[in-house]
Amino acid sequence: MCLAIPAKITELDGDDMAVVALEGIKKRISTALVEDLSVGDYVLVHVGYALHKVSPDEAARTLQLMAEAGVLQEELDEMTGADQ
Image 1: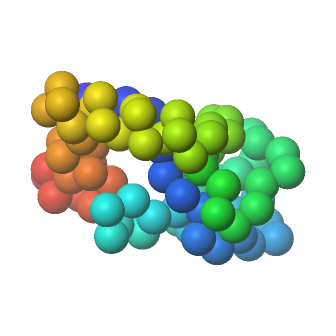
Image 2: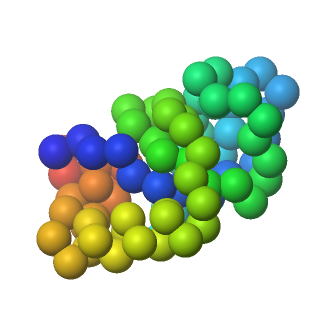
């Protein structure tokens, strides 16, 4: 389905790259589209790019709604390539 999904930044790289984590899954993404990011921030991630920062509360609400709608696992599978 390929929705934007909130994830927490766990590492920042000086080359507009970061590592995000969600449900134990880590993924390297581009942060070129978002300024002033720090480790611990939450961002909406879509096809390998951080689109914008979100609050921890907004991230939690979004993830809960995605889980209730039955799309969270599908998005996690896409992040890991498990759906291929």
